Amino acid sequence: MKTFAWMVALLMMAFAQTASAQAYPAKPVRIMVGYPPGGGVDTAARMVAAAFSEIWGNTVIVENRPGAAGNIATEYTAKAAPDGHTLVLCNIGSHSVTPARFRRRLNYDPIADFAFPAMIGGVPNVFMVHPSMPTRNLKELIGYARAHPGKVNFGSSGVGGSPHLSVELFKMMSGIDIVHVPYKGVALALADVMSGHMESAIGNLAGGSLAAIRAKKVRPLGVTSAKRNAQVPDVPTFAEQGVPDYDVTGWYGICTQSKVPQPILAKLNTDLNKLLAGPLKQRLEDQGITVTPTTPEAFAAHVRAEIAKWTGVVQQAKLEAE
Image (cartoon, rainbow, N blue to C red; front, side, top):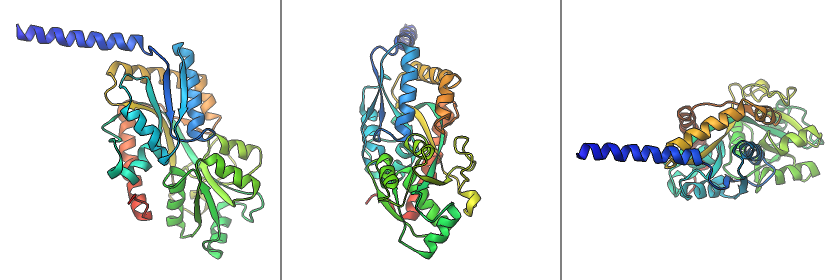
């Protein structure tokens, strides 16, 4: 009798979960972004939100909660109701670099407290200078920086973000000394470079960086990925310009709480992968994002590997939080 009751309880639970997935989303869905508007993460989130809204017939909004290298939005998502209505546009900064720096101080576990239902794709960072800078490519920048140690400044979206750490890795591998100037978002750093108040900046190619390059407001010196990006095919990689084996490719995905029912997680994976096979793919790739849909298991494994990689860089650069 107990066995029968146990089986009935399991069936009822399975039925309830299936019903919840069929009803999902039952109210507006929020996609949290841990950075200001105008950057690559925000751009990708808004494209995904619009696509989800269309196929779900439901409101999907982007909510920016910038600060603490993406940690504010990530922590908010970790502690939200586990019903799938609060998502986060997780990325290399929020779920790899920030855990590498602040793991002992986080109020959540970046792996155990999260589900990784769907990866979106990868995007490089791009190093840009004001057109008046006497450097036409990264090799010339390396030579200039070696001749003027500590005299070249570069802006980024903040201390410990993916763009910042990609330059710290570049400095280690090239032996140069350039000075980091943190901003509250890459859009602000770009504005200073375009106006001539800052020599250089680095940021995700997607979003404001690509727009500034297309408008010829900045000069791109190199992309951080192992291969050139189709949106800026004339911009060589760091590895092509005297930094062998250099490869930093950022990534974007949709994450939520680990306690969200499995049928809802499966729906998120199925629906986003369906969108990534349609017009959304071209819209993202027009922004320099290489679409790479995958399974939740492969996505989670990628995140774990990225945390391990950036923990090493953080330790070597002595950027761990005190």
